[in-house]
Every structure is written in C-alpha cells, then in structure tokens.
Image (cartoon, rainbow over all chains, first blue to last red; front, side, top):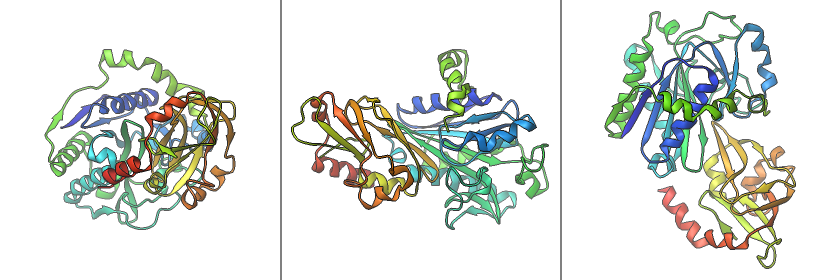
Length: 247
Length: 128
C-alpha cells in the first residue's frame, strides 16, 4: 500500500522531525509519502553542506534548517515538498536508485499533460559535491526532472538501516524574495498560469500508486497531537546549532 | 573476514579475544551501490562504537548513508586520509580502503556476522 499524509505548513525543524518519523514508521513495511509546506520561506541545507555557505540568507530573513538527506540547498516556500519512505525489506528499499527513478518518472507523467516538455536529465552529474553549488537547482544529476534547461524536481536520500528516506522539491513558483535567493523559475513561470499545489501533489501520488500497482490511501495529518508530542526531542535536535552547524 | 547485513566488513588480527584489533570497512558491493562518493564523516580515536549503531556517514551523489558498526569497541585508529581520496574505497575496499581500527570489546558479536559465502548470497538476493 502507498500511504499519503498531508500536513499543514510547519517550521523547518518540525518538518525534518516529521520526515524522520515517517521513515521510522516505514520500517514496518510499505511506502509512505508526506506532502507538506512551510510556514515561512526556509532554506534547507543538504546533509553535509557547509552552514557558513548559506549564512548570507539570514540577511534576507530566511531561516536555515539542515536535512538528514544529501544533495544541495533548497529554498522552500514556492515549492511542493515531499518526503517518501520505504522499508529496506521492500524491493524498492533494497534498490534505492529505483525508488528515486519511480518517483521522478511519475512526476514526468503528471507534468507532461500540462504542456511542458518534461523529462529526466540524462547527462552527467554536475556540481554534486557538498562544496558544489549551494543551490540544488543549480546542480544536475541523472534522473532530475527537467524541462529544457530548467530543473523542476530534485530529490535526495538518507539511507538508513531499516528504511530509505527521500526528500524532494518540485519548484512551483518563484518567491517574492531577492533574485539571488529565488534564482530559478518554477512551473507557474514556465507555463504562464497558476498551479494548484495540492491537486498536483495528489495527481502525482496517484500516478506513483498506479505505476507500482499499489492501492492508495490518502490520510490527513501525520503530525497529530500525539505524534507531535512524540517527536518534541527530535524537533529540538533539528532546531539545534549542533545539528545545523555540524559542518 | 566477516560481514554485516548493512555491508560493513570486519577483520580481526590474531585471535578474536577482547582487546584484539579489528579493522572495519565497507564491501565492494556497498561502494558500487553508493556510486559517486563525495564526502565521508568518520569517528575520532577514542570513540566507543556499539554494534549495529551508526559510527559515521558517507555521502554519495544524492544520498547520505550511515555506516554501522559490525561490532563494539574503542576506536584506536582512523583512516584520516580517506575522506580526501574516496576513490580508494572503489580501488581497494578490503585493503587500503579500511575505515577504522578498533579494540574489540566482545568477540562473541562476531558470531552474529556473516562469512563470505553467506554475504555473497545476500548480495545476490539484493542485486535481483
């Protein structure tokens, strides 16, 4: 079964702790996806990116959070963010690259009917080092979802002993922040019209379920009161300087 | 040499008694599955490793993976040059690509690990 959770906007540390919770629940088998948003524009650093490389974003009032997953930094707020978790016992958990490919291929199928020539980047990886370009969308990896020269969806994983956690960001629109921060056009700029994030997100998870032949169960909030109480310590962890400035 | 399900290997010098030096690395299959490696975070000399718990992290293109200790003990040496030349892991994962050396705390933990034949079977299964 593919279980989908939809949470209201939250802070960076809350979102990271919730994704960790999603991965821990994934240990029981199956696939789970969490679709979510951010209560304010937030910049997430990849697992080993240098915190000082993004310190200048504070001058623009943009808080930082560090993801447990790899990859480059992402400005959230104008994007559709997801976390997907699969048990290591699941065939896709034993083949994490395939998990990545399945989720991206489904997005290409959803984006193409919108009138975009969307596809998967097939060229060599560029800038994929922690010291590479700060922004994920300045980088290219095999399997990124692109439309022409524009990267639309980038994802990165945290491979744990019992589960694989994958983070991804679909760029929907350019935020109203300085151009050096909101560097890339989103779907709305490329299409010249508005996009409803929730609708697009649901189309995508339906496509994933179809492609995998799995029944789909769309649930409400992962972070109900009980779950939020259970992850208070982890929220503090992701909010701590020790985690944010680990590198 | 013995292997953990999480693809780390351990080799003990001499008799596997408490205090014996065990060398730890990751298997050729793990290196290949991780693909392009870009960063590695290692423990420090003096750190205590616990079997089954993370002792470091390795970043490849698009993924961060934990390294899990195959057995418990105190780190006595760390391959300091490795993060600066991660290609060593691909060239010689069982030799020059060693990651840490540790003083074995409980040799009986080695009994929980796989020998080469059993590990090869796991790899075959995961490769399908």
